[in-house]
Image (cartoon, rainbow, N blue to C red; front, top):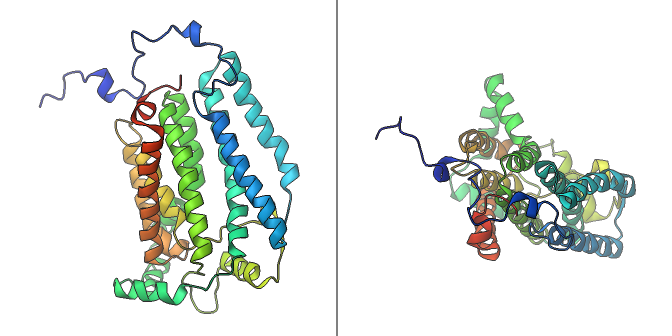
Length: 323
């Protein structure tokens, strides 16, 4: 194949040219507030539903979360920037990035609280069964953990930072998709991300586990789960909330989803795939997860992607611009 020949723009370009039948930019510059062609208002409605569930469930379970009210002005300001530029039709990438950043921050807080309230179901712990499943699959967590901790510092550094890059990747992706005018990818990331996160947190309440760890060194987040279950701690500061989900692995869910939304023809696919491959290697040990946690996380991501594609429709996902 002659690689020097120019590739068709529609095949390799990250922002394909507008259709000849599309209305001119001036006709699309200012949009009605309730048109909501990018599902922004519907996304806020979905976040508010989760917030309402959190509030009612936390109240009934006797959980109290401090520090929510002081965080509202910052999120409201970011959202206001998005709505302002969206309404005026100016700086479209700024508008989109602001919208999705505000939505992701709000949903992340709502999801963290949701993971706490579902833990109050106090369902039987599944650690013994998960450990047996791992053994049946031939996975030795202790041996892997010892190998990682005794390995070269470069490998430990790479795996640690790859594991902790999950939300950095989300916000980078949000800005990147807005910049290259791929609103379809931002919609996929948000809606499939919200669906898979809610499925993951709900399953964690039905199949709770502390995760594998070295005897006498229980991770802090596992200790929080124990405190929620036994009722010894019922008041939390928003800034201190940590992830308490073991099964399924939410990091695995997001690793699969991030690779999916950066799929070709986007040039970001290869570096994102490499970064998330490193994350997948780190997950069992940095996150104290069973192998079955990761398998379940991959299944949740796959099902959520299929549901998201069916719900949003191929035409919505194929549009290079959110217009």
